[in-house]
Length: 448
Ligand code: PMP
Image 1 (cartoon, helix red, strand yellow):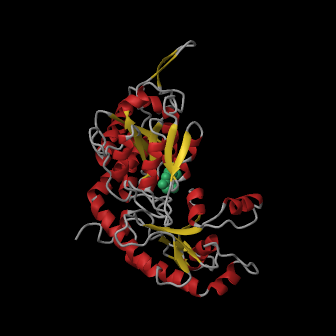
Image 2 (tube, helix red, strand yellow):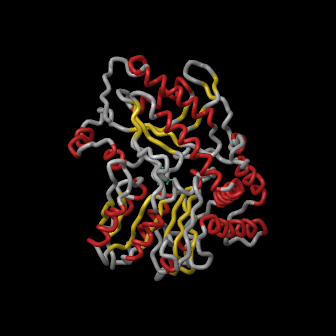
Image 3 (cartoon, helix red, strand yellow):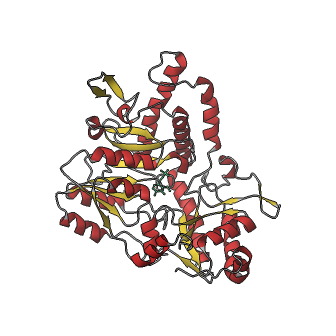
């Protein structure tokens, strides 16, 4: 039996800490909101505690602790490279705050090359992998099909249409709305064939399945990768951007200030080499300690085992959700669909926020509801027209449509999924009761 198959609730901090319900009852919560942020691993907290006595600000200090902290901070880059099989020499690992910052840095750096101005994003992206590109690029969105799955045909079509002008194809490794895992090793060779690079937004993929950036001479090589520590059991403010050192070598950094320079006078600024060049300001050393400890834990648990364990849980959820009347799932439900342990749905006749509130208030279950920072994708899944969206935009009091999402972590148990399934079946079976109780007098429309 793998380590992941046994109960891992104790591996994270706080899973069994009781919470109060509005009626005063104390319950053990069920956390199905791991795609937003995971609790820390216990080993992450222990690593921080162990390191704290040795902590000091890094790089420019000659004191013993400063040197030790610098060593730990710098060697963290190697651990990260090993984790995603990045090239040890050619790639640089830039520490950031989170995926959002990583992609903003990348967009800022890449826009300095004036030659190629088109970026191909997709219709399924989180706003972090959409908005930063809109500012300085001509962004085209690769289409998704009626189930929200990425169209590889449309990718090729757009690469042909904008042949020679596409700088980058930027795509989520896995969707934070539907849970689909995108075929990045199919996309990478196609992008490279047309002279474009590929960036993978790994925020939802890296915590759940092993990631391989592949060698530079492979057509499947992933040129850039971003991800966040707080979604992989290290919520201490560190994210990562990985890419070729040469790209960051001669470009203007996104954040400017101390730590990013070699020498400055009133007349000139000589920026440092990457990665320091893109890490202005005092570094988040503790965040790196946390991330490295989380990576060690994930590696020891084995990413393959994590994936298959979580897959079993989500398949169980999908199977039962399909049988519950008035529930609509927003994903393609084939057994062999590549997916992470996350799924979105709606309960007919109940607003998504209300469903989330009932789950929390009555059952102690945490889920997420809304548009999940992927507004255009959810709007598309809900078949909303531009006119519909404008109407909601004009009247902020209208309850905007949206979905409910459950997202699992490796510490979730089958029993917890069953608690959720029983709760949602009860809600779907007593919609009138719950509607009256939570939104008395309000007739809520169904936006399926
Ligand atoms: N991309 C995806 C697919 C995400 O799910 C998220 C977080 N919800 C982000 C990017 C942004 O991550 P962060 O908030 O850590 O910057």
